[in-house]
Length: 101
Length: 101
Image (tube, rainbow over all chains, first blue to last red; front, side):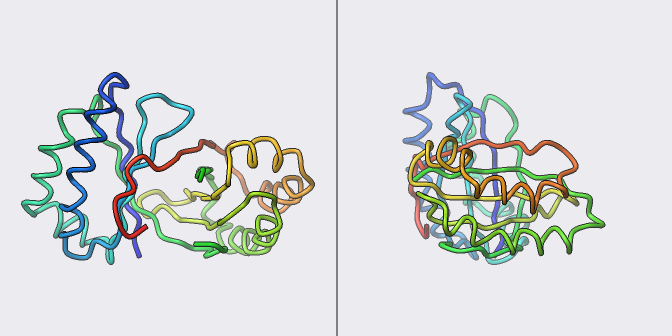
């Protein structure tokens, strides 16, 4: 499983509208090929900083299949207007499973 | 639930020993008060970059109870020698639950 982490910076004054837009985008990720989970986290220490966490079956499911899909265009149309900076995106995978996961 | 994200930078040449040290530290987190889950992720795009993800019942369970505990000393004794930079730590919480979580 590949974990996409997209760090998003939003004007804190627009938080309520941004959260509503992300809620509206949930079905886009649910319908995306190879997408297993999605949620939005808010960073406590930094106002306006959020992390979109998306689990993909493979790296290519995100970087190729999703990014070339209509779903990506729809996601960006919903959330993009709130981005105060270009999102910073990377991917990770578990190397120590630990516990409770 | 509060998600601690500690970004760790390690000399890539020491990866195997670092992963063994983190494996050895799993029981420390399992025994920590208010700790619900722990795992280590490796960032695909950046050699030597890892993220320790720990779920806590409350922010204080990490920032007060754990950091003042022997467990924190034991964790740092195991993993600290591998840190090439001071870890960058923050906390987040889910604001859009999405799906699959």
